[in-house]
Length: 239
Image 1 (tube, rainbow, N blue to C red):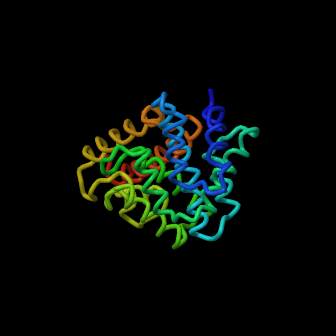
Image 2 (image 1 turned 90 degrees about the vertical axis):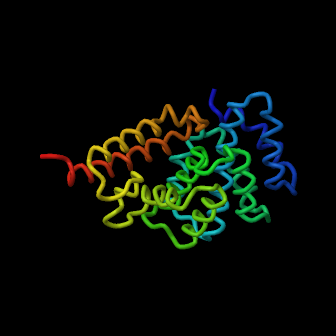
Image 3 (image 1 turned 180 degrees about the vertical axis):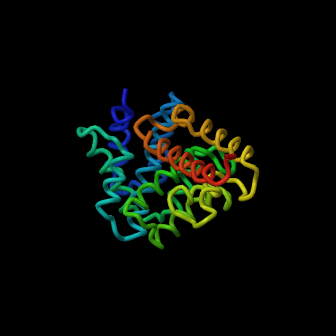
């Protein structure tokens, strides 16, 4: 059963109140899905992506057609369920609470409590995918994403790895994507690459809570890892 078939009642519960805010959203997720931990993780991820996308749009002040297209690529929602996504998006966008309050609540809802939590990285990757859909990471979007990463306890070096998957950082870019120092032996680069591909295989990502409907995030990440490795391989691989 699609996650969108289960999320309608939850969205109706939090959007009927004119005062509904992030605290009520988080509490509703915990309450409505208290009996199913796996479903709760999937719904938590979906809510975090929708709410923080809305807050990013509000912070940036401009939503391009490319960003709308990227949002729809990630959110493969059945036509009959799009109104529920729109209701939650609008609720988050008009909520007077700032994006930092949203990021903190959603980190507590979705995260492991440890630095560089992979589920929170999945959310950040999805936000980057939307933000850079028009080919540019605008200054306010960059500030928003960096601050969210701090709240998510994504370490600075790891944040740069995520950033490099979406924004070209110059000559060192493929090494940053793989999270390995330039100048390391090719065999070490290959081991690092294989580890990343294994960790980020779509099946692994879904197993930790990424809903099937958001598989675009996992496939885009693996494509960036593959491209970085191929660039290094051309330069370093033995003839």
